[in-house]
Length: 559
Picture 1 (cartoon, rainbow, N blue to C red):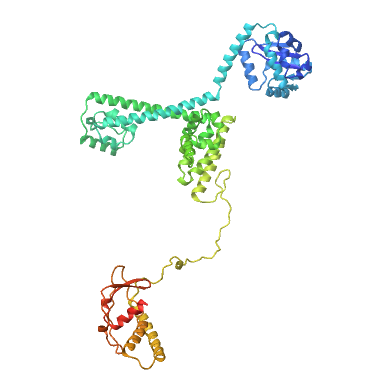
Picture 2 (tube, rainbow, N blue to C red):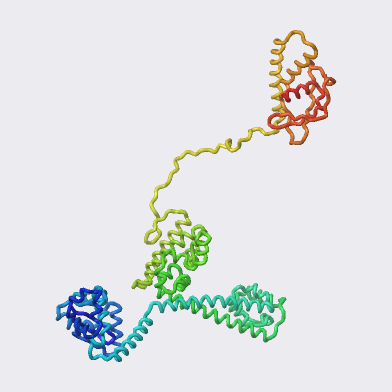
C-alpha cells in the first residue's frame, strides 16, 4: 500500500513495509517513537519538491478545494499507476476526485489517519535531503500566503463591508437629525417663520446657505430651491418677522453648520447607493424579498451572511427583538411576532391583524433566499422574485377575503362552485328576553273599572247564597255584618299604585240605595296599617275611612 503525504516543501509518497502492524490502531503510535522504528514501517518512494512558495500556495489551495493540480496529477500517473497498489489519502474528498479522474483505488480510514500522524511526527527522519530550518521557513511562508489568500477571497470579508456600511448609515442618520435640529433652533431666533414654511431639512439648509441674514430674502432668488408660491411666502414673512437681530459672526457659524449638514446628506446618499450595489451583488434574493436596508441590518445583526443562513425562520422573524422576547418569557406573556423584519415593505402594507401572519411567511421565504445566496453558485434573483409574487398573492387573499390559487405567478383564480344557503330563516322571539309581567306596575283606570264590575257580579251571587243559608230573621247589626261580608267581595279592586313612602288616597264613591251611610258607627284611628296586595304594599290611614263601604273594603283587604 502507498501513502500520499503532503508537506509545505512538496509531495511525498511512502511505501508501507509491514501492513500487519497497521491492524493494531491503538498501539500504532509506538512504532513511530524513533526514526529507526518509523523506517521499519514506511519507506520514502518518491518526493516531489516545490520550487517556491507560490507553487506551494497553488497546490494547497487546490487541495483545500478538493481538486488536483498538474504537478500532483503527474506524480500519481508516474508512480502510483506503475505500482498497481491502493493509495492511502488523508482527505476522503480528495480520494474521490483521484478515483474519478485517474481511476485509482484510494483508502481513507482511522488507520490511515493514525499512520499520517506518525509520519508527521518523524518527518525530518523519513524525508532525507530537507533541512529542518528550510522546512520551518517554508511552513511559515505558506501559512502567511494561505491566510492572505483566504482573506482576499473570503465571503465574510465582503459581508463585513455591508455590516460597516449599514452601521455607518445609521450613525449618519442620528448625526443629521441632531445637526438639523440644532440648526433650526439656532436660526429660529433670527427667523422663526422660515421653519414653518419650509419643512424639508435639506432645502432649509440650502436656503440658509444661499441667503444668510433675513434682510437679504427680499433681493434673493430662490426659484431654484423653492416653488414660486413658497418663495413669495418666505419673502413676505421675512419683512414682518418677529425674530431678533443677530451679528455677522453668529450668521457665519450657522452657515458653517448648514454646510456640514449638506455635505453629510450628500455623503449619506452616496453611501446608500453603495449599499444597494453591494447587497444586489452579495444577496440579490434577500434584497428582493425584504429590501436592502432590512437585509443589511439582518446580516449585521447575525455577523455575516453565513451565520444568518444558519438561523431558523422563527429566529429570523424575531431577530432584533431579543429584549422583548426574554421579557415576555420571564413574565409569561405573549412573545413578539416580529423584529427587524417589521420594516419590510410587505409587512408595512399589511393591515394590523395580518402583520403577524405575513411576517411569519416572509421570514420563511427570506431564510430560503438567504441560504440560496450564501451557498448557491447562481447570482440571479429569480427565486426571490418568484417567492415575493407568492407572498403578494397571499397578502391579496387575506386582505380581499377571496380564494386564490398560489401558482407560479400568483394570479390564477381557483375554480370553486357558487355557495347556496339552503337553511330556513328563523325569526327572533323577543318574548323570552324578560321575566317581568307584560303589564306595567301602574295599571290604567279603565282596567280597574272592569275588574270592579266583575267583582260586583260575583258579590251579588255570593249574597244570594248567604241569604238562603242564613235565618230569615236577622238583627240590624247582623244585617250590617252580612252586608259588610258581601261588600268585602265587591271591593277587591285596587286603585293606582304610587311610589313607596307616599300615602294612597281613595276617592269616595257614591252610596247605593241599598247601603246607607254609617260613618258614625266606624271608629276613627290615627295610626297606619300595612296591607298586602300584589304587586306591592299600601299604607292606609284609618281616619280616612268615613263610609261603611270603605270600611268593608278595608276588612276584605286585611283578610
